[in-house]
Each structure stands twice: as structure tokens, then as C-alpha cells.
Length: 423
Ligand code: EPZ
Image (cartoon, rainbow, N blue to C red; front, side):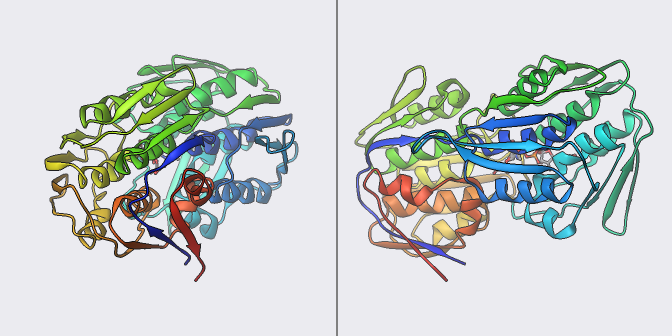
């Protein structure tokens, strides 16, 4: 696995252009299975997870082409799923990316069947999909879960009133996509309110679907007969945005994040301001100005619009540089503190329970050799390395490259001393 080698202590200065949202483009790519028409998806980030979804859709028979607009322009992807030749996602591809479960809904709608290998847990906890299964069964699917595979089939799907026990993001998205051709109305109550769910609603409606309410806790879908191709631009990545706000804050830098949507990062901006980060926002940019001292602050992760769990590791890294005690409560996943052990190797003082971490910030960390255990933990370790004294080597950066486009280039572009080392 490749590593990043980071010489800490450099103030970041300059501009970072935010990429399209990973957690938006993945369900949107899956939704392209719902039509025979061509879907053009703009602002496509160059991520390993996007490449995995390309392999999944290609294996199902979709034709996919990449392009870019003008010189240095944004990438786009053209997906045409006019003839589907399969309905199974291999265990290998499912293992590469758990979120490939978002193909279940579209395959049920388009073909009336799917076969996926049961996604395992991962380093942030057990990741059951019982809400997905129950929602699809309520729409009329018959689902068998045996020998590590999940088989789904449905002669016809009928709209129902579905209440989610928890506002699961991808369960909301799977049910939306399974309901677009269902007979009659479907209502999803206690739906996830994330901006990525709204982006999917807009993509589906651009195809001729009738979806309303995304962004609130009740999403309504009225089944239609056919859907056509669509051109859509993916929203900016709010987690990448928050990650680079933290990078600027930790280094006392002056960084402008462009092509982003500040209101999607409201909770992050509010909490980081509470921690002493000087943040200005405009229509599509965020500026972090130098600040002298970060303040210890408590964080509680919640479903959107609360503080996002995907920013919890980055917040923990930042609190190591604040003097004082910060309490971090992880309410979404049951094992999302693996990055704390790695931060301890850098001299952090963190005590971890199952859902609560106590960070006793000293204002400084020392460089060390650390290992990324998942995408956001890896990002947190890079942030820690940027602020630490000395050299930090972050191993296992393949995790990071699943969800951050060109992190090394973007950080070098604002003055970070970071180098990718193979092997
Ligand atoms: C999405 O995952 C995101 N991934 C995650 O981002 C994000 O952390 C998560 O939402 C929470 O915001 C994508 O959108 C591709 P959930 P998802 O279903 O949908 C439990 C990243 O780093 N649950 O909202 O899988 C689950 O165990 C990734 O970009 C069930 O119990 O998350 C968790 O505790 C990590 N049964 C909670 O709900 C289910 O059927 C929230 O999970 C489904 C979920």
C-alpha cells in the first residue's frame, strides 16, 4: 500500500477547488440503470469508488464513457444502460465498496431482480442492511439472504407507506429508486435528509420521475411508466470541504475553498467557529483565515443537518491541537474511533469508550508512522501530520484515494509538504 510522507508545520495558503460529492455520485450512477437513455453526469470526481461503480455497471451491461469539458475542465461520465446483461454484483466488487448496495433498488425496478453478496462490516462498525431489505420487501420484493448472498426478485412493485427506524442514507436512496416504477404512491417517513438524497431526487426528477420532499424527513414518490436520460451536475463534496477547512485551521493557514456549497456544511462551519476557526462564506466559496489558538469544543455526530459522522475523525485530529478537553460523541456508527489509536502514536492524549472519546488537547503533536483504517480516519491522520512537528508517514492511503480526489495535489497546491511514496 502506498503512503503519504508529510513534513508538518507549514501554513497552508491559497485556493482549493472542491470536487463533486462521492456520496452523491455513487447512488446517481446506480440510478442511471433505471433508463435506456443516456445519462450525462458532470463534475465527476476521479475516485477509486467511482471506478468501482463503473466496473459494477459495466459488468451489468451498461456502456460508459468519460470525458472532460475544455482544458482542465471538470470530468463528466456518460452512462447508457440500454441493454442490461446481468443482475449480479460479484463478491469481489461488493467487497471493494460496501455502498454498491445502492444498486439493489434500481435493479429491482428495471429487471425485477438482483443478486449481491452480503456486505460485511468495515472498520467503522457493523453495517447491517435490514432497513434496506425491509423497505424493499414492503414494496413487494421477495428477498432471500443465505450463504452470504442476498437475492431479490419482484414481479411487480406496489407503492407503500414505509417508516425507517433510523434515517439511513442509502436505505432512503434504495427505496426511492425501487419506488420510481412502483404502482401508486410510496411515502418514506423518517427519511435521511442529507444533501446527497436531495441530489438523487433532482437526478431522478430530471429523468422524468416524480419524487418530492427530499431534504425533509418525508419523501414521496409517485410511480411512473418510463424514465429518460438526463444531464446532471453533482453537488460539491461537503465532507471534502470540511476536511480542508480543518487542514487550514490546524496549520493556521489562509485558504479559500472554491466551487463548494457552504450551506451543506453549516453544522461543520458552526462547530468549527465555536472552536475558534475564522471562517467567511460566500455563495460558492469558504475562506478560512489564520487564527492563533483553537479552543477545545465538544462534538456530537447526528444525522443531517447535525454534525456529520464523516467529519468526526477530522474534528478529533483538530481538537488535538486545541488546548483543553474536548468530548466527542459518535452517535451513528458503533466503532468509529480507530483513528484515535493512531493519533496516540503522535502524542495525542485521547481516552476512548464505545461512543465517547475524551481528547485532552495539548496544542501539539509529533510526527510518527501511522496507518489509515478507513477513508475519513486516513484523512484525519493527514490533517494531524500537517500540524505535527516533524515527519509523519500515513500508510494505507488507498483508503483515502477511494473518496478524496487528488488530495496530495490539492494540499501541495496550498503549500503542504506532502509526498506520495509507493509500496
Ligand atoms: C452513508 O452510509 C454514507 N455513505 C456514509 O459515508 C455515512 O457515514 C453514512 O451515510 C451516515 O451519514 C454513502 O452515502 C455511500 P446509514 P450508509 O445507512 O447509508 C445503521 C463515507 O465515509 N443501519 O445512514 O451506509 C448503520 O449501521 C461513508 O463517505 C442499520 O442498522 O449509512 C449506522 O449505524 C462512511 N441498518 C446507521 O444506521 C440499515 O439497514 C447509519 O447508517 C442501514 C443502516
